[in-house]
Amino acid sequence: MRYILLAVLWCVGADQLSAQVVKIDTVDYPPLVIPKEKTYHFNTDYWYTIAVRAYAYEQFPQLLNQPSGQPYHSSYFNGLLFKVNDNQISYRLQAAHFNNNIEFDNECEGCVPKVPGKFRNTAVKVGAEKNINYSRFQPYFGADVGFMIQKLSTKGFDNTPVFAEDNKNALLFSPFVGIKLYIVPRVAVSAEANFNVAYTYQKINTYSNSSFTGAPLQTKRYRWEYFFAPLAAVTLQYSFAMMNK
Image 1 (cartoon, rainbow, N blue to C red):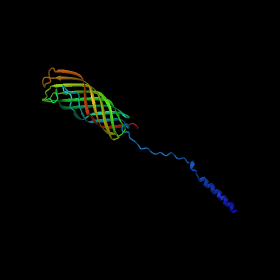
Image 2 (cartoon, helix red, strand yellow):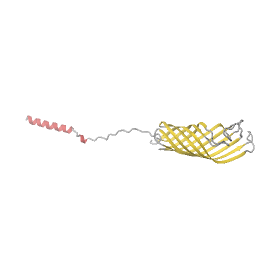
Image 3 (cartoon, one colour):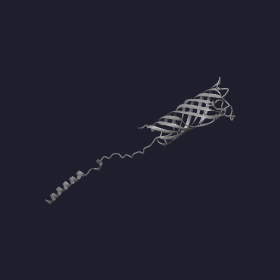
């Protein structure tokens, strides 16, 4: 009788243990996923960029009878740039305005006295730029086309040897190269140089004295001109409107 009772207890215990055992091959585990490091593509994160031209060092089309080899002029915070970004290509619209008193050689290099005058130049361009890579430091290149209006007047300058008004309009083609450095994903600093090919129309009104009265001697010219900007624009850029949002 004792052996029968032990057998019954052993069978009941074995049944309880088997009910709690789960075979390892019946358990489903989710696949192991290792999160990828998040990367930033500085030139594709944002749809739009606005920039201020902080500095420029450039030539302008010929003034009066200025000899070849136009001087370079510096300017500060006198231009705006707006870009629509599409991956590595950006489409851009920009405008710049130079307004300052200048002095320059007329007729010959080094002629004395120099001609002083009030000089204004306004340029509006549209174009495209192509980035070389997606890194934080981005070389780029591209081209703009545009229109330029230029005016010079020596009126009001008592020491001028020429009493004249020079008005010039120009169609522009401007290939450029540049570099861009992102300080943070939204903010970048860039610098670019360009070479300008211009087809210009010039009208010069020359007067006999400083009163600028009477019928002027008028000269009109159409010509091709070429001028260079080793620093066409040093810009501070801000990008906004995330592409992936």
